[in-house]
Image 1: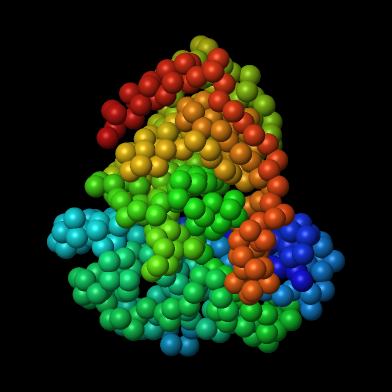
Image 2: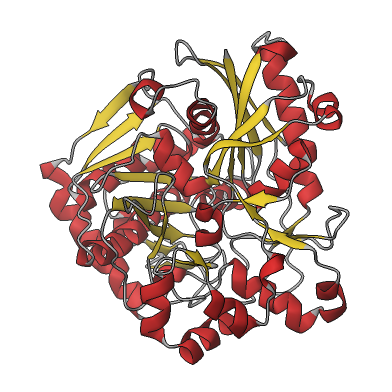
Amino acid sequence: MYLLGFDVGSSSVKASVLNGETGEIVSSAFYPKKEMTITAKQAGWAEQEPSGWWENLKLATQEAMRGGNVSAEAIGAIGISYQMHGLVLVDKHQEVLRPSIIWCDSRASEIGQNAFETLGEERCLADLLNSPGNFTAAKLKWVKDNEPELFKRIDKFMLPGDYIAMKMTGEVRTTISGLSEGIFWNFRENGLSEMLMKEFGFEDNLAAELVPTFGIQGLVTDKAAKELGIKSGIPVAYRAGDQPNNALSLNVLQPGEIATTAGTSGVVYGVSDTVKYDPLSRVNTFAHVNHSEEANRLGVLLCINGTGILNSWLNRHVGNETLSYPEMNALAAQVPVGSDGVSVLPFGNGAERVLANKEVGAQISGLNFNIHNRKHLFRAAQEGIVFSFRYGMDIMKEMGIDAKVIRAGKANMFLSPVFRETLANISGATIELYNTDGSVGAARGAGIGAGYYSGFEEAFSGLKRLEVVEPDSNKKEATEEAYKKWLDVLNRFI
């Protein structure tokens, strides 16, 4: 049986076909070939049309099926990974009412902060494990306050992955993991947060029907099957936000295990079985994919908004789109650790949770026109991204999560030797790189949810470790010194 997995990001939509028996990736494809448009009508805003995700998903599916010479009848189950914290609104006819307010949109930060203070910080953190902050619930309240006529037409709110599943199955459904990432889930009561719904003035029936993260969540309709080029009746058997799913794809499921990714945004994600939280809510805790009422499996998430998007900005505006990313990486490697005194703060993609929702913007410090060139910028940017990881990982350490081994897919920023070596040296952790990504993880999740695999061990028998990067003791001191300079720059802005 073949398994079809999707990763619906803000840059592109990727589809992968997995041979369920061997665990081998048969084919993959992504659309669009250039990054999807993010619309920002005001500073701090970020929106996308959900229909664009669906159109690109169709194209990626068709290309992946052709590339693997996979017949429509061969697909046995579908899994969906999606960009977290977005808001999709539909009416009773399942028509989208407005563009999605996506993960990096910070317009609702003040709304979330006010609710945090009104409800009580300790109460929010203890019940929700996070403040309402800039998550989906606060974004929905923004719509209620600023678009009241549109709000009256809402039948259901959804996360981006719920929308994709709706397009496939015709069913409007969500998961505990999804409600958790939107800050709608009360962990103490193990249900929809009545205190938050009441505070924001939401009726409970705005929430979609709950389905398990793993399990039959709906069947592909005739209409969707025709659009996608697959057969109808295939079960959608798994869905999760991109970061819990990334951890799943790396078989990071048990307390103490760490996963990381560095795409448009960058994330370090650790699994815990203990209800702990950062008092300042700079890192956040969500229900992991294998969380249950009987056994806590909580994902502690550090997110840096400005990661791969910084690298792509440099590619366009400094590399003039004439350099490939491997060429940029090679140029960065020609510069010594510390980038000859240049420091880059990568915080140019909206308010940063790790900085207590401050929007400090990207910064370049220490630039000398006589000695520095684009090589220094390329390296300093990669070092700055890694240093932002270190800044957040120090907060996670205070919560009892100390990274000794970090697992990542060999993709995006982890294709750069400078990036992965800097991360090993500044964290002191061993970096393990694997042949997987979000779409492949979603395909494996589908196999688990459909009952094709007996459990996680069988599902991940085909996961291959490609490379191990150990800390380099000869570069540790220089890397630590560069981090201290970077931290001095950051402290000027926070």
